[in-house]
Image (cartoon, rainbow, N blue to C red; front, side, top):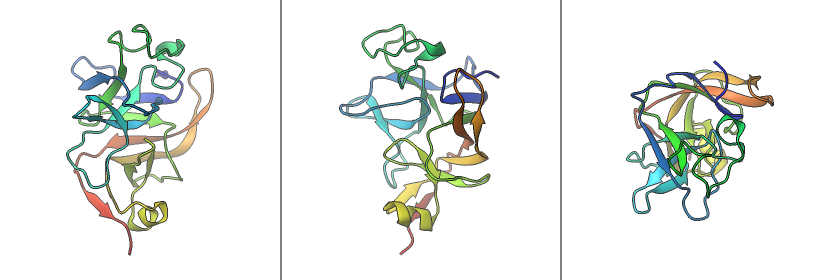
Length: 179
């Protein structure tokens, strides 16, 4: 399957007419990008990067469709225009409650196959263990995904991007940093 955008590729489950998605504008001071993991702030109805530490009520979404400067189908991204984002005037996110497998360039470290992943405040996925959380200065984190393929090159699209593959994990497990 060819890449929908330069730094995110839906390997399984998208496009799908019954997929749960959301379109919103980025929150104040929030810089979104393709492949980032974000949630909707219920008070502003806008995208916020990552999943707050220990907050199992936030539904994670992977952002695409012009979120980072390349735009859907390689059109330039302009947050003031409607044509660059899903036709709805916002940045689209695909919910983790869907049965999808995604390649994303938005990750930190070197996740391995089978690693539990959390979404940091920078919107990037990272390995979620007591020791990695301690090293990152994170007290506790919600597991949001499982790594299905370690870092590799995504050759589709006009550039090669280092990506990992993941499937959502909505078990809402919380991992606490090592003491």
